[in-house]
Image 1: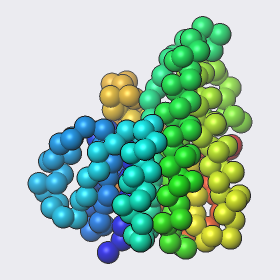
Image 2 (image 1 turned 120 degrees about the vertical axis):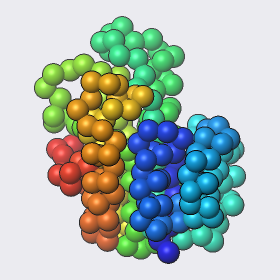
Image 3 (image 1 turned 90 degrees about the vertical axis):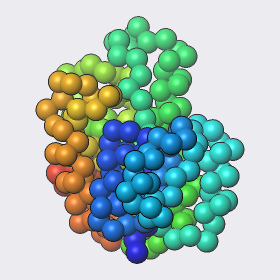
Image 4 (image 1 turned 135 degrees about the vertical axis):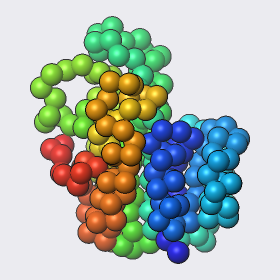
Length: 225
């Protein structure tokens, strides 16, 4: 049985991605911030779902999970946790809010990948939930500047991790799920979760074993860094 470890599965895209893999017959280890957040999935899938309660910025909790998973082998490591953060123009963003955004969207996911990637088998995949807004080459409109910066930082960090493990046989992916109607994406988004997540899971399956690193959309389309 294939195994997924996903960080940030309480709701939205993370929960949907966990559920998609459970439906495809995977063993899923999912982290949530609050107990009972995904009890509905546990009721449906039983022991195929293992739930761990932690905050991705709680270093001790994250390292404790790493210790408990020693000896396990992962086919897919996926770090989904993230926040939108402040939306004013960058010149109006408060330092504390920006620091929190970078902590949650960049440092915490990268720290997790760097600590857990050795559990991923050769031929497996380590992925982070990025955004097309993180593309430096594609930014010709501005807007959501703090969020864009946090995702560009995430993508850069993942490239560094991949460069240090160039011979690992692991595929590293920065994934853009599209603009999806979730609590963070808002009601105006053109995609439903059902439009994005099954195709995202298909893309992950298609890219598995390819090696190297890619910045890729849920449609399996490469994005300019």
